[in-house]
Image (tube, rainbow, N blue to C red; front, side):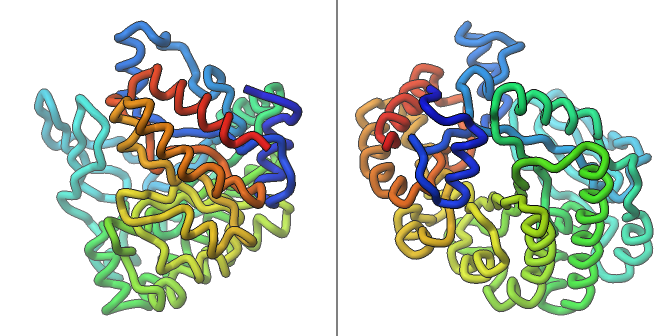
Amino acid sequence: MRTGMTGIERMTNILQRKPVDRIGLFEHFWSDTHREWVNKGYVSEKDDFTELFDFDMDTCWSFNMTADINKKIEVLEETEETIVTRDGNGAVLKNHKLHNATPEHIDFLVKDRTGWLEHIKPLLLPDEGRIDFEAYRLKKEQCRKANRFFCWSGVNVFELMHPVCGHEYMLMGMALDPDWVKDMVTTYSELVIQLWEILFEKEGYPDGIWFYEDMGFKERPFMSPQMYNEIIFPAHKRTIDWAHDKGIPVIMHSCGFVEPLLPGIVKAGIDCLQVIEVKAGMDPIRIQKQYGDVLSLMGGIDVRVLYSNDKAQIDKELETKIPILKKGFGYTLHSDHSIPNTVTYDSYKYFIRRGLELGTY
């Protein structure tokens, strides 16, 4: 799939919207998908999809941001299909054991400012025990050998707060006690930067930063633009500025409908928006027309079309979007979420081949 440029060269240019030979390529998969394809004999258990499909980039999640990193996960209840646990944030969550799913929120130790100050904030120290140096080092070396663009990946403040107090208490706090949430935002953004400084001093800088920051749901963001600008924006600006000061571009993933927040997110300085979830109401073409001169895009290909496993539908989706999205050299091919096990191996291979054909300059 490689032509004249390496993955590092290609993604570096795409994030700056400079000329490239073709659009970029990256993807996320549910673990169920790997199991399904193994069971059907398409891949082996040892196959790494990044290598198998020759993606232009890869990521490494190397920070443990749980408040109490020494607390072992406590099992409260378990059945054949589900498991209920309490973690080091004091959060009680129910997870499905047989398939990937978002955990069900049951209870939280922290429900307000008092719980935060008593149980969580004192534990959020830049301890080296929070950092997986080896994982970062090995992934960085693998990417260097493959000439692949390497991203440190992790979460920013919105995705750091809700595991502590849940979306409901966090959002109520934003409305009723914004100073409490601002304190969480400041604390977490400081911790991220402090841990970066420790990690990068020892192991060197990545090519990019990848933040997961799911700030929307179907047709609505979790907060108003005003709340974003007043509460979340300062932390985004601070962490992104830190990265930019080191010459590191920033990709931000956000599921859900976040278009109303984009003026603030773009002002905070992100270089690329991912994943542009169509089924939530996002439209990559509309976003490209409005922000394409200042923002690269990754994703926006409706995964529902892929799990139809109908090549004609896949063609239509790609032919409608890729010729427009590739204008300005700022696009990377990716589904609008992750590839589920309902997508066949042949359909995914066809998606890549056809997408890159259309995305060649």
